[in-house]
Image (cartoon, rainbow, N blue to C red; front, top):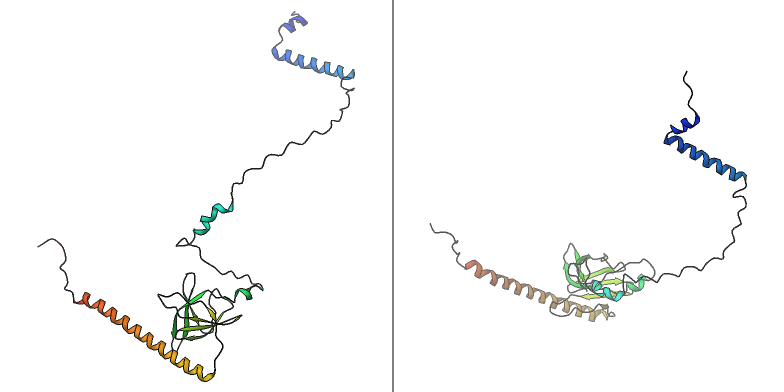
Length: 237
């Protein structure tokens, strides 16, 4: 018969896993016995501590944008304009202040068109910009409170919230006349005589300028037409 191995022999042939399991079981047994003995049941209560001081605030960070004065060059040379120069603009807010702002006009009369079919004035912003054509009875862009009343050979009359404003035709080579309110009406006889004389003189002056300009263009074009044609340059054949 084969005899059973003894406990000592079994322990001698036990592996590492067996010893690890035995150690874990031993520790668990010791902890269980210590808990039964009252370990951890007599802990002292925590003493409340006074709150400590708050941390000091951090110093303010330096201003990354900088003062407004260093951006003066950006305002003097706008990025989104062709000539990099500031231009005036009219902002319509739609409040009661528009009546006061509408009493001033920033247009210069650069031309008039008078025909049986249409009568219109060509105006341009005083600070520069594109010219616009305004018909009689219409309102120019940028001046909602204005309306063109009449067009004359050398002037245009607008109606504004503060009264009538007359724009004289700009003469090239001389500064543009400032816009002003219309003068009070004179007696009928004096007004008719003066208006007829002024209109006749204006028409004569306009015809004289047109004829002088036409003669100048003809003199400029005559030498170029009479000049002999030059032979084309190229290799000789």
